[in-house]
Amino acid sequence: MTPYAEVIGDPIAHSKSPLIHGFWLNALGIQAEYRAAHVTPDALAGYFESRRADPAWRGCNITIPHKQAALDHVEDRGDVRGSIGAINTVVRAEDNTLIGTNTDAGGFYAPIAGLDLEGRHAVLIGAGGGARAILFALSRVGIGRVTILNRNVLKAAALLSSFGIKGDAVPLGSPLPPADLLVNASALGMAGQAPLDVDLSPLPEDAVVYDIVYAPLETPLLAQARDRDLDTVDGLDMLIGQAALAFELFFGAEPPRDRDEELRALLTR
Image 1 (cartoon, one colour):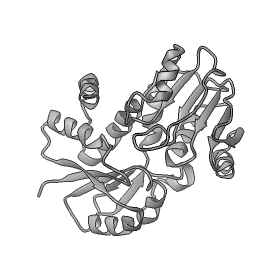
Image 2 (cartoon, helix red, strand yellow):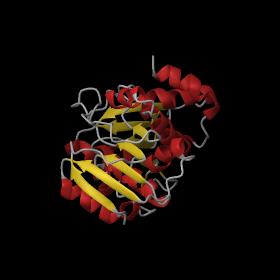
Image 3 (cartoon, rainbow, N blue to C red):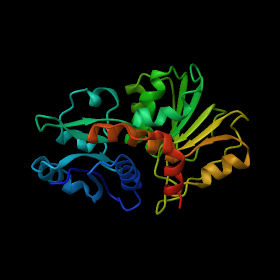
């Protein structure tokens, strides 16, 4: 019985998680598998019920659109619901309990840990599960103000309030303020999704543009930022960072992060 973990979502074909975890499993010589599973919203409860009964299943990563709904099907021992409000990882405990957690916040913050964001202004595009993890991370480093651009302004305003962050919620497409950090936490710009149409000219020369979309890796947003010589962070940085935290939970071993350049080359072929 080969142990395995997987990533679930709807859609899921774009996911690079199987390549990442497979690379690490092979590098460490661990006899296990990591798969992708297409799970629609109406099949989510049945998915967890079936995996709960499978002793080979170590857990799963969760992507759009299940990061909040999955909380209803697992135990929340770390009160992720009360802090971040969304999970991206479920792990089978020794007592076979399924426990939800979130590695997105740590994965998001790792590439920008050297930035001094205390008291600064950030712009966040989107207000879904990924945005929750990002706001959690920003609140912990003392961000001064966040402007959220989202189709549903009331949802974005409620999100700011829930994290106790000062800021504004404005409609998607509104002009950007001169912020220090811009993060796209939406699916806009992802392959198969609508493009993200945003004018970066209001951003100062030392601003950082961070796009969590990784398919395609070179999004129009990042291309526009590089045309202005702005510092950028691409979606693979967050993806690999959150995956590393999850990998250790699934397989009980630290991934070989000294081989990140080799992994990135594999992911960008």
